[in-house]
Image 1 (tube, rainbow, N blue to C red):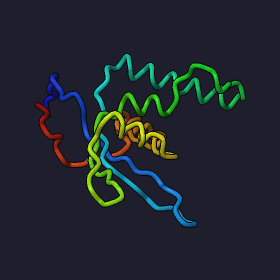
Image 2: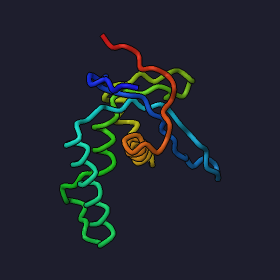
Image 3: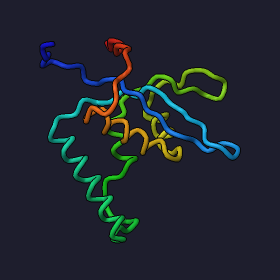
Image 4: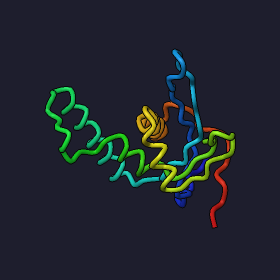
Length: 135
C-alpha cells in the first residue's frame, strides 16, 4: 500500500486501564483520538519522559521541578475520544474541561501515554473505525 503524505491531524487508538472498585480491579477502556505530532516533538516527549523516570529512580526529583509528566504528555496528545460515559450512561463530549477532569482520575493519564507510545511503536493494532470528518 502506498503512503499518503497528507495525513489527518489525529487518529483513533484504544486506551485500556484498570480501576479499583470494591476490592477488585475492573478493566475500563475507551478510544482515544491522538494528535499526529511531528517526529521532533515525539522525540522530545519521549526523551523528557525518560529523563523524568531516571530522576525518579535516582531519587533526584523534587516536587517543584519543572519536568514533563504523564498528565502533561496526555494533555498534549489526547485531542478527542469515544466511549467515555457519564454516571447516567450518556456519552461525555470532549472538551478541555472534561479532559482535565479525566486526567485527574488515577492511572488514566499513564494509560493514555502508554497507549500513545504503543501507537507510535506499533505494539498493538488500532481499532478498525475510521475517524469522523471535522468541519
